[in-house]
Image (cartoon, rainbow, N blue to C red; front, side):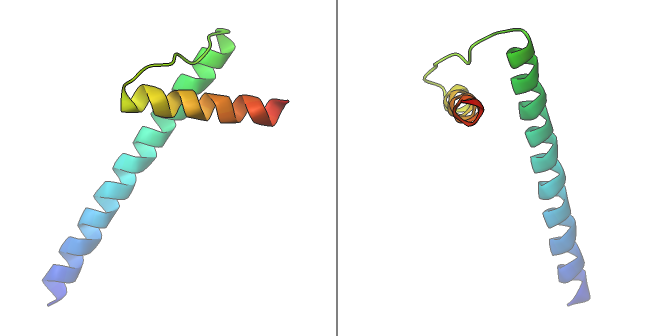
Length: 63
């Protein structure tokens, strides 16, 4: 079934494109916050928590 393989490839490509866009937005957000001298907020939301953890890891690398 060549059609099934093509559909699978199209879905994988869409998922990868979405992941790359999300990663770019996160990187730009972190960069903008860092340049503005902001600390990463500690929130209870999953996305805020992930952003806080990434910020902590980046700061640990700088030390």
